Length: 112
Image 1: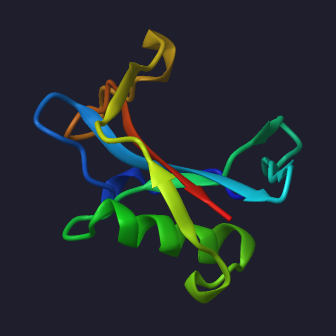
Image 2: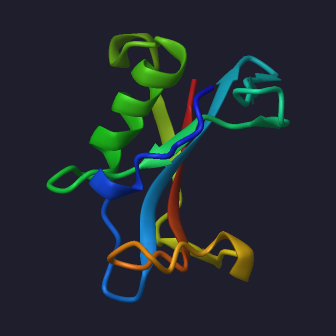
């Protein structure tokens, strides 16, 4: 999985939170985790929502970009109703970029 260093094209709301989608991909009782580029751990596929893009559109784009899985190969079975927010540790806030991103707000999707 690629590191998402493309914050510039992603939506950052007026409160400083980057809009992001997270994807829990399941097959029967197996859950997919991807290894981060550089071997720095494992995570669910995820990525930023671009300007003019709905969260569900970002979900399918990220599945294709990160693991090469086309929308026709998965079924969307659930999602969080609200944005879930978290703040970045101070050392990760890039104060020299505009707009400043202080954290992420995520909408999570479950696909099978």
